[in-house]
Image (tube, rainbow, N blue to C red; front, side):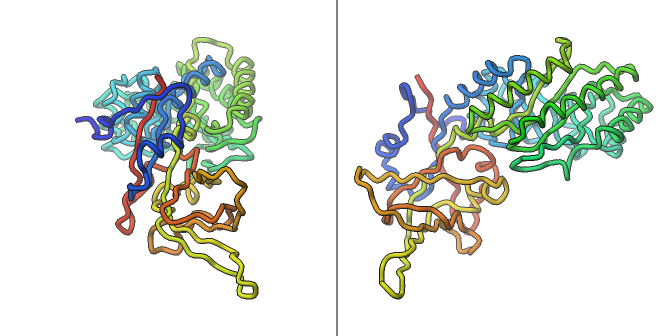
Length: 397
């Protein structure tokens, strides 16, 4: 059965999506819950940008970044592959008419029941980074294709991943390949993740060079090494930075993997969806703090209908720096005040930011937050009884 969100209406627009017009047409002042405005055409534009700048690299969307079925369906129709980490993510993607060959089970440590589900549905490609997982596969899914995940971290990344996943490329990776050979398992490629939100241009070149050495070792063991997975880390709201990273990746691939018989994939997540969602929040309460000596307004505290336990979990878990935009109709230059934004729950931790400059807004006014599509929706919870944001979908004609 399809997720109910798949049945939601798509609103169509011409040329560009006007957020202010959406707010006026939807009468959002009457809505208690926050609202995510999802631009599906933004996802399409990102896909075509990827194809243009990284023509040799097939994108496998990291479902964990935003598991909205509408987004998954858009990428499925465009021909993307998918990086899944669990049985439920596999179910979601397979239910969107995606063939098993377009999926990589990219969690190096999987429950046995999830492996059984993958085997039942023909998802053969999966990552591994330790000997215990190899023995698990030997016992429970020996016909799978092992993709050895090694460690090669960027010096600058929003969320480093090497402390949890990836084996040492120089020693442990080759030992795992020898173990797989002894157990008559099939190693078909390598996988790496330089870190989510990578800012170091040289990180991918370093990672791809390590992969080349592992491919050479695998060939010595008579493995048919045919899959190179360069992972994620690609920026979602900075196309200029992505263009520079893509140029570096292309040069590295041409140097180390000129053989067209090697399939090259990546696991972009935030690249596709970060800029696709704009979150609209309503101020449901405020407090003014005045200077005790002069009586002048010093600080304004606003309480919104979404917070750290909802979409803004990205501040804690993804280290995101938010951007706030008010929607006042006045064209005059309004005085700015130090502004604190709180979420709706009773937890004092539920502070969105304590260092914004905003005009003196009123209860019922709306604040928008662009680039809220990555690592927000899947983690949001209705803590304290407050609902997670509703969604509206838009697409260009």
